[in-house]
Image 1 (tube, rainbow, N blue to C red):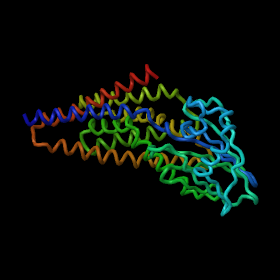
Image 2 (cartoon, one colour):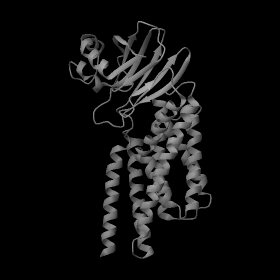
Image 3 (cartoon, rainbow, N blue to C red):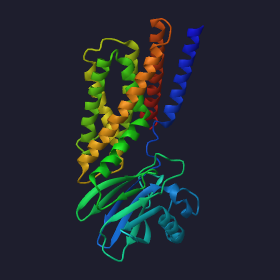
Image 4 (spheres, one colour):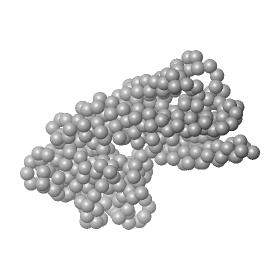
Length: 359
């Protein structure tokens, strides 16, 4: 009876995992924004693509879409909103927001709107700093990734609710590296599909040495395709990539239940890692990451992925170790771990059906 209680508990936890992770699997960056700031001698243009809900004060007909007429008719209220949330300052001089224009009436993402903001200063710009606080409420993971162009140089910075300020001209390399490392950590820790894949690897391996080999193969694989995809050397449709990632979860979870020989399995995991790398690259491609420091961006983002991956491994091994210490026979403990793997396989199968056939 005691063993049955543990089994029922494991099944309930697995069901909760399926429901929770399934709800968030495709929710990356829906609340985020991207922008480009072009700096000239005494002015700066900020082309910003952001969630339309942030501009709802100008949505007169409440249809969720912002038109050029609505932008024009609501210049005053939009200026007040943007002056409060988006500030460009050169030393002590605050940039004057002179114009707000609709840059793209039908953006590729129907939930977002693209606007162009023009700022001017009385004296030549020397040390421009930006403060960006235009985020949706209750969206702590929202980000605004901005590419800055100045005197032929380009770089990228990331704004977040916890880090709303950045230097745009005299920007140190460490600022950009830190931003993208944190982005990598957050990306994998909120990517439930990648988390379940790593957990399945832990369930598949039987020892720390086997875990190390599989994780290393996965890391090398995704690092290669991450770089190739961001550099536009390799490109696959995102729907295909996401579907293959879901299938990879099913495969590894099933292998974890079978617990067969580990020989040459690292080659398979290496290949699956290459698929996940294309998925990791998607966020950088969507955010149009460019600049002369692209190498730093890639290295920092990948480092963040590895840090997040290590955290997942530590937590996963702790939970698995706790399951193995339950006072019962070895067969029951094995069935418990197989139950968890089965739940992961079902979750992956559900994601595959959603991504492959429901778009």
